[in-house]
Amino acid sequence: MADDIAWVGDSWFEKSPHGPGMSGDISLTAFRGTKVADFLERLGADRQLIDQELPYREASERWPVEDDDSLCMYGTHGEWSYVIEGIGAASWYWLSIARDASAAGREGEELVCFHRGLPAGRPALSYCPGNGETWHAADFGESLRAGYRPPRPDPSGKVAALDAAMRAGGAVFGDRPDFSDDPRDNWPKRRAWTREAFTAIGAHLGLSVPRLSVVDGQLPAAVIPSFMR
Image: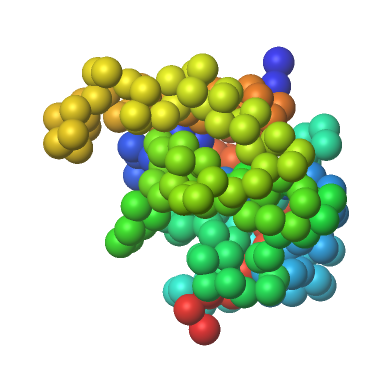
C-alpha cells in the first residue's frame, strides 16, 4: 500500500538524526504537468547530476555541497512528481516569494508546496492550479482564498475545491473551535492538526511519498543552489 503524506507533517515536529536520509523538518513541493528533471533544472540544479540518478545516501557523501545549497531528493508517483528538502525550507517557495521567473506558475502545471519555514519564518502553503497563477496562504493553516481582498477570480474552481477539502478535513484554523487566539495554547494540538492538514490536502490531490525511501535516502538526489545567491 502506498504511503500518504501525513508522515511529512509529522516530520515538522522531529529533527533529522545523522543518517542516510531525511526524517525531520521536511519541505515538500509536488507538481504535475512537467517532468521532474526539467523542474529541478529550472530551480538551478545541474542537469548532469540529475541524470546520474545517484541515491541521496550516496550523493551526500560524494558530492560537494555548499552549506546554503539544498541537497534534495525527488521522485514520481502516478501523475505527480515531488521534491523533498530537509533544510527547513522549500527552494521553490522562496523563489516564488521573490517573484523569480523560475518559480512562476505555468499553464498546465499544477503544484502544491508545503514550506517548513525554518530557521526563521512560519510554515506556509502555496498552490498553483495550472492556469499560470500562484496562490499563497498567509500562514499554514489559513484558507488559500481568505487572504485575498477583493476576492481573486478562480476560473477553474480548483482553488475553491482545495479550500473546501481543507475545511472538510479540519485543516483551516479559523474553522477549529478548539484553537484559541493564543498560539501557545495551540501547541499541544499542533502536531495532530498538522497531520490532519497534510492528510486532507494529500487525499484531495492524490499525493503519495514513500516514507521509508526518504528516511533511508534511497531516492535520487539533486543539488538546488541557495535561493539567497
